[in-house]
Amino acid sequence: MNPKMLVHKSKAFTLIESIISLAIFCTLMSVSIYGLQNYQQRIEEKQVISQFKINWHNMLNYSYLNKKYTRFFYNYDTNTMTFVDLMNKKEFSHKIKLPKTLVNTKKRDVEIYVNKDGTTRPKSIEIKSTLTHKTYRYTIQMMWGELVEK
Image (cartoon, rainbow, N blue to C red; front, side, top):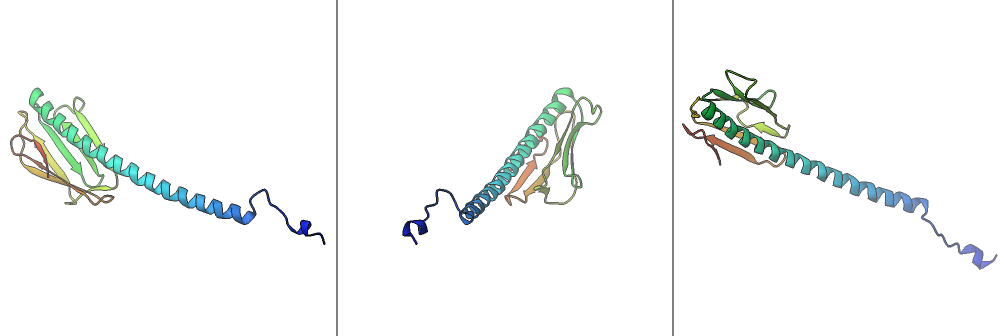
């Protein structure tokens, strides 16, 4: 037998090499997709917390400027926050659906009324992130209605 015939130079991947490289590629893709989903959930949490702060301040300003009674309501069962004018819901009404990763630590509904002069009673709201394990604590100042983050 000719020794040159026994030596076969392959110019392409073998089946085993292709399977190994495909397995490595799939593993890297699954890790990066999980990291991307985690990142998206963190961004969504930050956006919802920011929306809550903005809508709270808008509700205070609306009550004070328009001399109207408003209400903030956190529904534990549906995990939603509602900001509404008590007399005319069409004029001022905002609803925020919290992501599943954010939950109220007190496990009950929270209801806060704002008087037509923009004042309110003190109350506290705690929202915990199951993703980052961070607890967002907000206290509503008496009379001023200012939202204080702790």
